[in-house]
Length: 507
Image 1 (cartoon, rainbow, N blue to C red):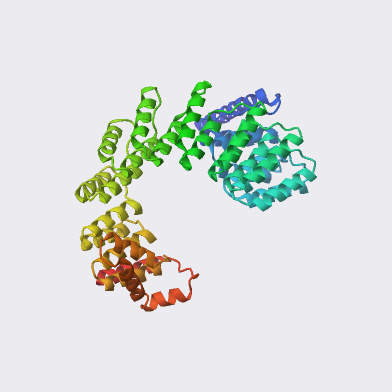
Image 2 (image 1 turned 60 degrees about the horizontal axis):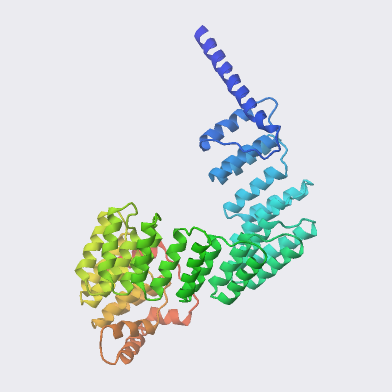
């Protein structure tokens, strides 16, 4: 009994010590300007601190809880903050605009901006005034969900309430408009910024330039670039990379290369994204060996290629028939720190299949499985197509079914490849069965696919045979029903998938 009393006293003493430490910990920065950050090693550490705060008498004010919530947000645990916010609400701890803005931020990160807007309504009902941070957070959430009509409504409401957008608010809207193909509207916002005395920064200009580049409007992009320079805003690596990417996409690689030279002359240090952009552009322009030379240059000058760099170069080498160089690069990856992923394997398998090197493709397919990678629909489809091309239709069909057994659902392209295979090998019955199955799972079907398939097989009069095969398929009842209701959505279900397996096993 005495031992239990001593034990309880010790626990109480330790708890009081911890509470005292926490009180000192929070009071040490609570006298500041309110922007000090609290750091915890992990979520459990933060939760333990929260529980200790609840044991303090009197309870801490909302400012201290907000600092803790901000720390948890930085860890990415948004749902935890929502739960804890509800808990302090039950304790009748009065929330302020900062704590409620944190809550809005959490909802927006979880793609529930509708709940964030509900919190805004609560803020107004409480008689609190939303801050520019509150509005910017909500605008960003709406932009992420592509709700531009609501963005404009909220933006207008913000102006009516007397809040002047800052450079971050403008950038949220400019970025969203630019990415949604409304770069001209984004430009108007940029001009509006200047009218109200908000000086656009390098991020605002670079974002707008990227918007024009994404649409291939390089003259407009260059015009914004020149405007930026004339205003005394110095372009950074991100700005130049956006322009390079735009020129590369429309195969004006020489202008992209000139920008790379300009970047180096101005003392800016291009990153791996910049170099990868130019490598991709060279490959698009049919110059994979020049891309390979640039790759060697960046490796020799201390830049570490990432998986994207390897991927675009491998793809370029393969597409232009440089398989030997591609496999040399693949072996280099296997020896290095950046290991080949599924995309790399799929690029190589697809190239081997197109070159008629089926056995090599099958060997590489087995190797990727041995490496613990799981083939996707593109990997399977490449190999299925090669098997069909070689006349191994039974093996192709088995692999097609294995794809399903491995949990990889065939897409429209995969179905069309195997259907074309059976049509080419004079088995319209099986092709019809697969077409019915394809329609059962909401895939489109069209005669151009059969034309391409028969043309690739080298048969005479491919157009005529393709049309005949397609119209023959359309005679089956399920296809006729589907054609009567072209917009009907037939949802895939577990029951439907089981029925499908039963059907093909009976064949």
